[in-house]
Structures are given as structure tokens and as C-alpha cells.
Image (cartoon, rainbow, N blue to C red; front, side):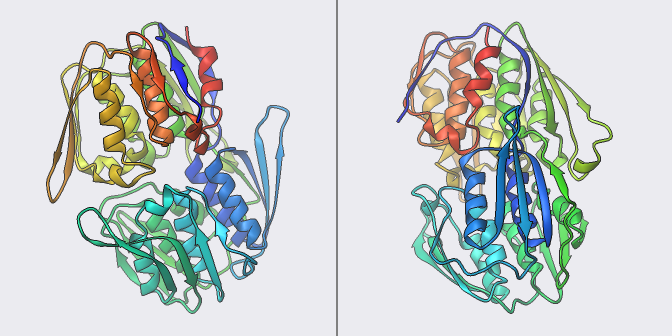
Length: 448
């Protein structure tokens, strides 16, 4: 465990560039492994989760080379072997606490004619997997997981998971939960069928998988909330991929610059994917001074828009975040809760139940911590939905808070502590390495 003492900050100025988007990075490794030939991936993030995806595909027989540039950027070269080129691993694959690695890997393994055991870390072993194993079983994969029940008494399935795939059939699957990971897993499995697999979303989620599948020449069509992929054709590598900066990582800096006085911050070459743009839309609605300029002519990253984000100090006001907005900012809800705690008036987050089943119960972790600091938070929970209501206060007060072993909770509390009156002690920040190991190193020189 590594604790951190936070003192108030009185300004934020400078310019930063962030490591590549985590969601895009996972998918670049996966599709690079499944496409014959060499794929070079630039601005690859060095977090633990993405390393687990690299490790998994190495165990499946894929050669992957990693090197650092003089600037410290990570460049990954994947030597793909085609859809059927991966091999049965000699031992079980450990995916740590990377939910993206586990769920998307299940989609790939569903199309393989061998058995694989996937083992997860403590946190991920408590996260629900039936949402992804169910449609893969419908397609013909044999899957055995750890059965159990959720808090509401419903049957559930958890890691470790054994999967034996092959001979998949195309299906039409109407998702019961809005999840980009589930959608991606089913689409990946769809590559191994002879027909057309259709996924219908209840609410549109991040579309990185669809964009990258198009980049790799998969036969895929997207019409609103319906995605159709045709199997039976090899992928084609684009040769090079440049990953834009991670907007989820950027969100902590965007919120902090909005909250602190004397702040002006430029974040360069960040992902501006519309399905991930929710944090910008909501903060602007709250009165944040945010300007965005798109990068032009970056051909090798044409599949994902990117640009610079400029943020200045502002006075925030409350808003209502509707249920249909949640998928576009699900990972940014913890830092938005911090912003809402200091915004004038009332902020309502509707339909946020998925926060209960992240790396930790983020509704609990964030509300407990912020209440200790003087925030006014109410949780309304019914059989159909769960809402968070936050009444803004003028000041948060320093306190002893917990990360709950969750990277986004920890970074959100760093931001809260920098804006609070007095000192804030966070019990353990080692979990930040899961997604953003250079967070504090980038933050320190910006603080005034």
C-alpha cells in the first residue's frame, strides 16, 4: 500500500500529452494478432491492464515486440497469424483485473478449437460475466464459470472461466445491458461464423471495436444501435496505428482545471470519439470553459478523431445527466461526482447502477469519501434504476479517504483533495497503475 498526502492547489497551468486510449489499445493488440502480417502501434499506454492483453496473446503464440522511443512513448509491433493462427496455451491465462482483456478474449477464444482456462485477480473475480458468456454460449461455445448470485438474488457467473470454442453459428443478440465490452466480444466471435452476426444495443455505447474492425477491413455495417458483422473472411492489417490520448485519463485534468482558480491547461491529441465525448458535453453544460480543436490530416489515425482540449477556470452549476448519456461517460462518473459536489445547485445522475459492478462499487466508494469531505449526496435506489443526487457545497474539507483499490476512485480523490480546504490523506494510490501510472508525474509540474 502507498498512501498520499494532498495539499490544496491554487492554480493549474501548462500543456500535456497523454498516453494512448486504453480501450483502443486493447483492441489494437487483439485485431493486430488476428490479422496476418505486421501491425505497428504507436503511443501505446504502459498501464497494467493493457500489458495483460499483450501477455495473453503472447501465451496464445503471437509474437509481440515492445520498445520505447527517446521521448518515452511505447511502440508495439504485433506479428499477427490470422483468425486461426493462435495456439492453445500451455497453461491457464492470468488476466489480472482487466475486465476488457477477459471479456474480449472470450470472444476470440469462442472461435478456437481448443480449451482455455482464464483466471482473474481478486477484484475481477467478483465482477459479473454472464452478460458475455450467455451470448457466446448461444453461438455454440462451451463455457464453464464460477456460478453464484448477485446482491439482488439473480443467478450470475464469475471467473475463473474455462472456454472451449469452435464451430460457431451467427446469431442476432439483443443486449440486456449497455456494455461495449459485451458488444465487442460478440462481434469478435462473429468473425468466426459463416453468416451474419447482429448485435442490438439498448443504448449506444463506445464504438472503438466497430471503428477498428472497419480499419482492419472486416465486413461490418452500423445502423444506429444495430451492428452487423459478416464472418468467414481474414482481416487486413492497416500496417500502422496511432492511438490518440485517453479521454478518460484527460477527464481528471479537465475537471481540475475547471474547478481551480487561475487555471489554463492544454491537453494535446486526445481522442474525440463521439461515443466517449460525454464528459465534455456534461461539463460544458455545467458551465465549464472548454474549447476543442480537431487535428487535421492524420491519415494513419483516421479511424479515431483526435484533437487538443483547452480548459480554463470556470464556475460550475448543477445539471441532470440522463440515463442514455451514461454509456458515453461511465468511466468518468467518479470525477463528475467531484465536480458536482462543488457546483452551484443540484446535479442528478440517472440510471447509474453499473457503477456498482466496476473495479469496486463506485457509488459506495465515491459517496463515502465525498461525504467525509462535506459533500451532500443522496442515493435513490429502486428495483428499476439507481440515481445519485448531489447538492453542491462551497468548500470541501480535507479528510482521510480510501481508494478502495480502485484507480478511478483514487484519482478522483486526488482532484478533490487539491480543491479542498486543508490536507487530504488517501490510504492507497498504488491502484492508479492499473490505468494511468504517470498520472501524478504529469500532474505535479502543472500545480501552482
